[in-house]
Image (tube, rainbow, N blue to C red; front, side, top):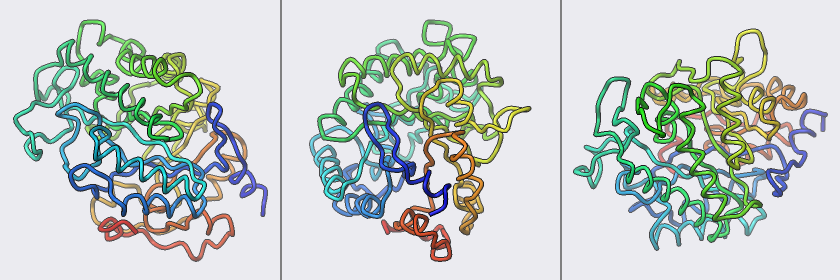
Amino acid sequence: MNKYIKKLFSPLSINELEIPNRIVMAPMTRSKSPNSTPGEDVALYYKRRAENGVGLIITEGTTVDTPNSSDDINIPSFHGEKPLAGWKNVVENVHEVGGLIFPQIWHQGTLRRAETTWNSDFPSWGPSGLGLVDKKVSEPMTLDEIEASIDAFVKAIYSAKELGFDGAEIHGAHGYLLDQFFWEGTNVRNDDWGGISIDERTKFSTEIVKRSRLEVGNDFPIIFRFSQWKQQDFSHKMAKTPDELGKFLMNLSIAGVDCFHCSQRRFWNNEFEGSELNLAGWTKKLTKKPSITVGSIGLTEDFIETFKGKESKPTDISGLLERLYEDEYDFVAIGRALISNPDWVSLVKNEEYDKIKIFTPKDLESLI
């Protein structure tokens, strides 16, 4: 085992939780949970990744208890007797083989396609009711709606602890509800929930983290996922300088985030001119907390090409491992490569790269 692989399979803690290696399963929506309830097939899907050595599984996004958090009845929810019982079964299956698992807690905001839902008469929520810059989807959230959505996140994170999950991840990325509060294009409020600067616009998320901490205590690990890019604008940078990024992250860090999951479309891209650090590298440097890098790891194409029906071939990960070895970031999150290869971790550990299968969109049709 060379020094790079050895580092990949070395333990590291998030809060007080020791992760046996640096490999994280990235959250990926699968829409395989009828009536928003994860079944036995979902439990076995995650179990297969755990028994093949994934250090930490982060589930697909699972939605909070508001009537407009989701637009797909097959996306799992994180409230209600049957969905929570389904998630408890998932946890038990993963723990049975020695795995660790966090749910990703999610609200779609105004990216919810109201016309496709089972409750289409209920308006979507967003800080200013905007889906795209200057495109009105609904009325701005009222103060009561803001409080209700915060409470729903806190309730979900508390439920994660009660169900036996090892921690929880809050989805603050990709243009969904929390990210809509961060982004000046979708948050034009002039009250305490808005603001001119990005650090002012963190209040919604910091309140979720702070209130969750009061419910679950200091030793329950909380990861926060964020991105510069938005589904509404792939090239957007909400933090245009390291100083802006630092102020944004520090508010969340002080609120109680233990680890940051830094989403890029391509992990190898440098975040700011004049530095070779990627987003996870800058995040670790600025917060002194563990960071997770993610974005087309181990594959030739990014996820946008998947939506266009393109396959993605396995690619060399030596650059990824070199940067991990140099402590630019602490964990690496694997997405589509783990969909087509439940045994990806085992193959990498044994350096059997020739056995890693091509990812094709057809792999999304079932839970391999």
